[in-house]
Image (tube, rainbow, N blue to C red):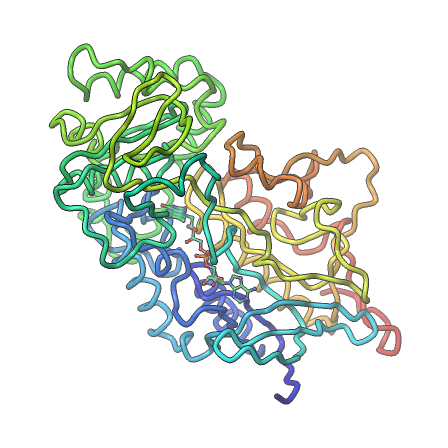
Length: 495
Ligand SMILES: Cc1cc2nc3c(=O)[nH]c(=O)nc-3n(C[C@H](O)[C@H](O)[C@H](O)COP(=O)(O)OP(=O)(O)OC[C@H]3O[C@@H](n4cnc5c(N)ncnc54)[C@H](O)[C@@H]3O)c2cc1C
């Protein structure tokens, strides 16, 4: 294949990649761009996951794009509606025509002499490898491996006579009607699967090692309905988005400042939805504080309703081994099951596994700080769409896209070709990038870059603070170095 050059290479055609495409084509109309997608479909997460009941667990007003407000009735939407929303967004303005499917980016080497990325990509359908170049790379690759989820090696799995499935590779023809199902795990996926499978299964048991926080939210919000009634459509979308962003942030802040109060409130709310005498202490009272790990949302209390109806139950125990018929637990009891769903989570992966180097030197990710949560120290012309862990992913990605296109435009107008975040402040202390104590975060923390203890290296996990930092401040600061290749004109004064 011939070597091609484009101004901006967007990697990934999921929710973030399509959003990035919108920003590049509307805010930088001068730029040539393409979206390279390893799979043969649009939508990323929302195309990959096909388990029963798949839905968002944050509200769609903030998970949707700011430039195309979610106009659905329900705040918590099903996977198909989210996928359709992404596809419609891509089709409306021709972003879908910019996507190269079955193209995986495997390596990217920045050349300072040429001020461009030398990219190695492979065709996932033919295995062919080819090279190309781009001026700026925008990684919208999500945060986990696509080829498999996290599957612990439980003892005795091979002798189990039933079916074991992982939610990330759900068999299309799996028939669970009238069957006994055990779901291992207590994260969002387990909470989503259980009420949905309980509708037709004989019984669904959620087997958790330890409890997590669960809260029930109505899937429809009366405030949203009111805002839609009193405001014209072009005002209600942004107003609803702000309302949701601010209230979610306020609830998060309350959790961090008054953990005891939040613990009590969450426990009380759970108690009210379960039968009298239910063992809330064992099954719904975590040892950690709210938001040390992600809080699970169940729409309209569907999980609690299934428990009340007796079609679902929770067992808090540890697995000793799989048996022929099910699972033997540390308490000595055995859970019989026709199907075991291993909702044991994802394997995190940074920047879609792309091997990064700068002038031939491999970028050692764990030794790098993130700049404004969206670029990497010492790595030129690379941005990353990484969303929040405590609020909707898109809130941050939208701000990142806006910032990146301002940065690109700034460089274009000033005739600059290279922007590199550099840290010269010895007092900045490196800290883990993600503040969560969850197993899946801890397992991969050593392979991820870090955040710093102060601006602009700190990751705020706060929409309001990021809004100020990314949208209201200028592009230039002490940490961002703008340069041109040696043989080109001297660095122009930035306008
Ligand atoms: C089941 C589930 C439910 C979720 N629910 C919510 C929720 O309610 N709210 C929320 O905020 N977040 C949620 N998330 C997180 C979710 O992943 C994000 O909200 C969002 O969908 C991420 O979009 P993305 O485009 O950044 O990444 P993804 O959806 O992961 O898409 C990344 C794309 O990049 C492609 N890609 C990766 N590497 C390469 C490469 N090297 N070359 C080419 N292409 C590549 C992938 O094939 C994929 O298509 C959920 C996640 C899961 C797994």
